[in-house]
Amino acid sequence: MLKFWKRKKPADAAPAQEAPVETAADADAATEAAAQVPAPEPSAQAEPEPAAESAAVADSFATAPEAAAEPPAPPAKRSWRERLSGSGFARGLSSLFTRNPALDDAFLDELETCLITADVGVAAATELIEKLRKRVDRREFADARALLAALRTELVQQLQPVEKPLDVGGRRPFVLLMVGVNGVGKTTTIGKLAHRFRGEGRSVLLAAGDTFRAAAVEQLRTWGDRNGVPVIAQGSGADSASVIFDALQTARSRGTDVLIADTAGRLHTQSGLMDELAKIRRVLGKLDADAPHEALLVIDGTTGQNAISQVRQFQQAIGVSGLVVTKLDGTAKGGVVFALAREFGLPIRYVGLGESAEDLRAFDAAAFVDGLLPAALGNG
Image: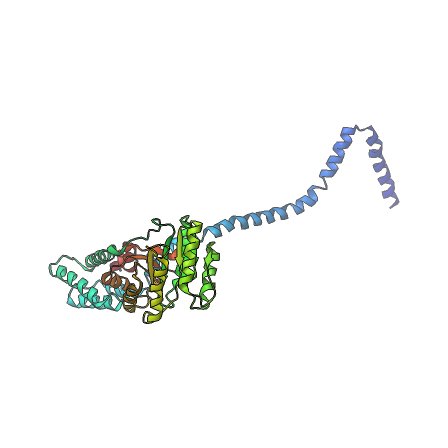
């Protein structure tokens, strides 16, 4: 131990004697070197951790936009074919054509049954099958796939006359009156329309005219908040015509582009509530003789042939000018669209293919038929 301390002192003393001889620059260099020696030790241990953390944070921020960019990706998943493939129409005809059947009377009878059970309607299905039967007799089809192509063409031709997009640019404000029975998704459709018009750069105002159902006003306000759209409302039980009249006055004073008015969901057999719709039209006429500029009837695609009687009753009460067919992505058979087109010829403005706001689509006859009956169906 003594030898160690003796050796240590001269070693320490030697640099102590050289230190005064060193210049200030050397001293600074030495202090810098001394500062650099400890610095790497903590930094060598600390830097990798922050680096890893920053990389992780960078990755998290890098993936965040990708995650935020994924919602736009669903359009591929929300295609017409994806949404409509589960309908009764698609399932029935798919099972029929994938067998690649012989083109005989038995096949045509089975095809007719499929169309009728898919809510196409007896008259429409019979007319369609008779056209195909004559062509089969003339041997125009080589196989079932050729007949499938002809069937698709016939279905598109039936729907093309009612493929008329809604143009809300002709009036300001454009007054859109929403009607329909309970449970068809009327208020939800209003929210989706507001989202759509806002996306087109239009100003929108909502009128909470459904004063009959307690939760209707709050539901509409929720959609208004979600889309950044103001809502004109009064208390529960208020006069619906008065609410919508006030909303039209407000829309005119603000220069709003589109006014969407909700109304109480009602059964088409309730004459009292149906008369209220006629009152709304009369009251709006005091401010604008042409209002409402569009009376949209919302139809639940799962109701089948009952939709025919609904349209007839609402047509008599208020003069329906367009249709929205909802819930076609679920258990709806889909054929009711053809029945409505043949029976009334009213424009089908929109169809509901899902729950999100983007799933309210402007009606496209070719896309609708392709979703129900893909061209490659008979290849299986």
